[in-house]
Image: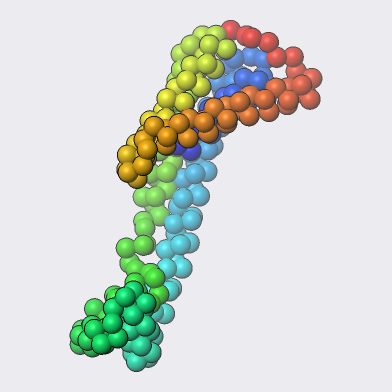
Length: 219
């Protein structure tokens, strides 16, 4: 959602600075939002699928090593437990106990020795759908005020204010989750939003100037 909010706000500011007619800004922003949502969904699907295939391969190799070279795995697990502060004697007892249950040894080795596990494997279809929908919902935050407010300049101001408020809320919530300063976290997100809006508008003005399009405040 944060990506949808920030990207769409930047696109609106850039288009408002480059295109002279309001309906062109709206249509182009809608097309950009649709393309962005599809792209994010496809990217999330492909990325999660590729990551899942790599993790599945690593899990398969890890399980083969546990079966074919159990002593090497036990020694690696013992070293890892020692690095985490467990005494050699206590680690040896833990590894010996785990070795009596091959499945428990396999699961522990996957996490402690290889740093992987089945919980890391996500569903690519779910990730793609969630990412695409989240992007579209986030895009509505700046898009709705711009569409509803009839004058371009006022609509743009409404979009920027809505974007700033939404990102401040996201930052505030992130600070609450991370047990950090909520206001500082919100202000950090707000600064990024305003910076993106200013940069997008300036870039749009530059593109308009380079293309020879005269940009005025158009209702």
